[in-house]
Length: 114
Length: 114
Image (cartoon, rainbow over all chains, first blue to last red; front, side, top):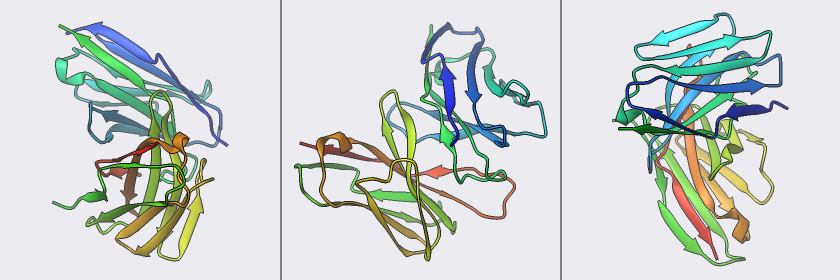
């Protein structure tokens, strides 16, 4: 089955700086890579996703890049703000782009220092 | 607003007791999921269902069972709870035929087994 490794487990950055979270996956058949954000005491929510037919996707201050050859993908947050503090989960799926069979990474706790 | 509702939100029980966690949704989605979240371990899939007649095991189904009573209802049961089943449990839904595989999570059910 799929195995998703996520690093780092904790990331502390100064407000206004950039943050990068990296994930690797094992199954070359995986073709859908979402990122979820979970604020303290809240439910996870999708913030961005990418499919294997593109290398990069942006949405305002967040972007995701995908390297299929190396089997890794990354989340980039620029100009970090206090509300970016949360746990972020990457995931990978091999089921044709749907939510079925999603394997999640263990999460990164992002801390934004004032 | 269409949503995913879990009951109970918090439950404390004793080893050996039978527990049922319930999930209902008003999103009209066909696909429903049960995930378990442990600190530092991310989200692990327990069971998922494509429709009332279709139930599939996830990566950690041992010790759990599910029932899809209707399109909108999906219950998770622990027949004989044990302490290492203490965790935060999330129900989630996703639609079919859409362009994304977004998971919509409920607010979570925190279970403590003493």
